[in-house]
Image (cartoon, rainbow, N blue to C red; front, side, top):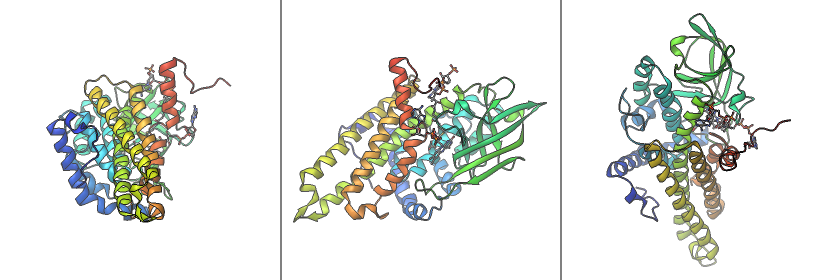
Length: 394
Ligand code: TGC
Ligand code: FAD
């Protein structure tokens, strides 16, 4: 079993329970999931999340940080982070499934939903009985969801939804979609839970991806789609609501990126110790050691950032900007580490028999979704200068 990368004794900062959950998730994934990943990725045949979701549910891997009510696991944010780290060490599509289910579907229902919605959906999502997705991005509005075109209009005790959401993780197979639309009457962004099969609601897979090939992504269409008032998230008013969900998933991504970095580092280290060129192991050359040292330093810094952020999340003190820093930094360094590991493996580095090339392709999605690297730079830039640089007056 993978023994972890822990140069600074960060394990000692974790509780016994946190280590226990991490180790059991790690063992389960290595035995039951890792062997399925390469073929799924190669064939672009998404992993069977209906089956896997139920196993994840049994292990408390879905909605880990949601309090222990409505069938949710009631663990803490650090444990959620460690779960994200372990699943992403295997493949980013697994972390996407966990982070979307937990942060983008269960969280908004728990935070903004009615009592009936919580009772109806949270136990089923926590157990993996149903799959959810989160629709914010539109064909014309990705980084700028505030300009969304999707509309909702109240008609008696129903809402009429019109618009398109695209690049939606698990959008092709989801049983429920948490979607965001602007009210044509009061101009406010509102959230809805739309069930699969609702008239006027369509789900279509996006294929031919060069990244995230072990997972599914889809497009959601809404044409005069009518949902009752009971399907609206009553407490979600304004763009702040969907953006607060992103905070949960972005935090999980910061840990997931460490999983990628650790797997690439370990793969490269093992390889260069074995592989000989010019009569000696690659590991004996200074240029090779420099790369490994860079990886270890960046992994250690990323671990400390996410560990501290987890504790701040648990105390309810983390700010969106602190979350941006962790997402931006950890994904950026994991992206560099994946590329370096690929390089150290030479030609073998482009083979799917080794993980770095798959991580390298996956992380292009991670670098882009949940706020691109640029967007997180601008969020931080705004925080330290007080001046927003997202929008230009033309
Ligand atoms: P702005 O004026 O900044 O904010 C509007 C209101 O929202 C509040 N707010 C936040 N609240 C909580 N958490 C955050 N992170 C928040 N950011 C902003 C803000 O205080 C304000 O509240 P109020 O009450 O005053 O109205 O809004 P803006 O339109 O200027 O946009 C800011 C910007 C660019 C940072 C935001 O639009 C943004 O984050 N854009 C990136 C979009 C994005 O990340 N999309 C992700 C889609 S989901 C996804 O990718 C899933 S991938 C699958 C996986 O996770 O694995
Ligand atoms: P754009 O916003 O068009 O950006 C293009 C480029 O311009 C980027 O480099 C960006 O950084 C840059 N840019 C944009 N604005 C500025 C600016 N003001 N200043 C400087 N540079 C700027 N969305 C969901 O809602 N739900 C999901 O489940 C989901 N899953 C996804 C899964 C995958 C695999 C992928 C790839 C995407 C997913 N997304 C999802 C969509 C994702 O959130 C968006 O792709 C992301 O927000 C970026 O939007 P965009 O692709 O439209 O790029």
